[in-house]
Figure (tube, rainbow, N blue to C red):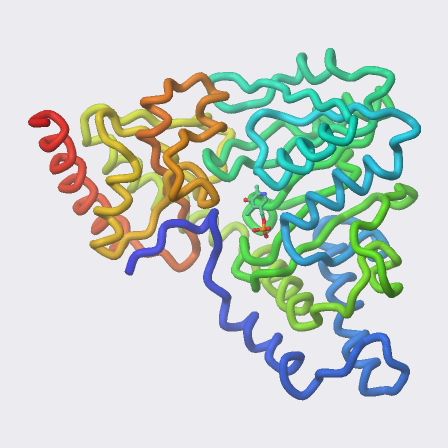
Length: 380
Ligand SMILES: *Cc1c(COP(=O)(O)O)cnc(C)c1O
């Protein structure tokens, strides 16, 4: 099997599994109990919190753990909305966000909030001028993702944060794709930031949320006093330890991984460009080094995926959450692609365990599959 879908999820690093294992077996105490046995679990959580905080240049009291990226985004958006609804009921986000941002916004609209969805240009970069113009007295939150999951395009979040700061509006960023791939620093003006363990070779079902000191948000899950009273429930100790380990492994090897993956991506792009009618979707420079989104003219991505799957190659059409449905990607449509080219788009997202051999084999099989599909469509 060749796995080229790292933006959907990643394999668990063996070193991460090793540090998680004790907390799934012998160190099973509830961190909230008072005996020394439980203090070890509590210490593991607090060590993880310090480590994650240090790597994004935050204070440890500014990081809480959640059940994943979706919960982090929900807590950021609904938590701020619920807490500030008397100040104003207007939120701004973009048209290219992940569903875990768009759908909480849609839910808030159904309860009386107003949401503005700002546009992107043909390269998939959000329009900062439109952002600035959209902010009004009632605006309480702006949420713009750091790197897009479908195209890999990196958004100008520092500038967006600066605009928000000048206007006195809170700024949240979904950094779930960028975390572990490029360095993060919350001192660039971000107020709230979401991460998820399984996008950087950590476990699934665990996420983190940075919330700048002094910012109040309403919890979504009420119960005990865990996670600084912001997220109740007995902690996922093994998950927390795993997220922290995976994040520090990723942060200690940025340069090496980036070099390796960039080389593979260039190789892949060069190979794909030998096919007629290939168009790369996204920005040529401001893009995550592991992501390559291309439209292949006169090829239905859904059919191509099935063909590649039979050969053991895993890639996505649009985002993973959209596969199975034949709706074209909202991200590519927002970038101005036709419905036809959006439906012809496939996403390759590479990771640290990919090899040159994987890429050569993928190019070879893909060329064959594309010409096969084109023959069928032209004869039909
Ligand atoms: C994967 C992803 C999410 C959702 O994270 P989960 O941990 O799967 O809930 C949110 N936003 C982006 C950009 C993602 O890539």
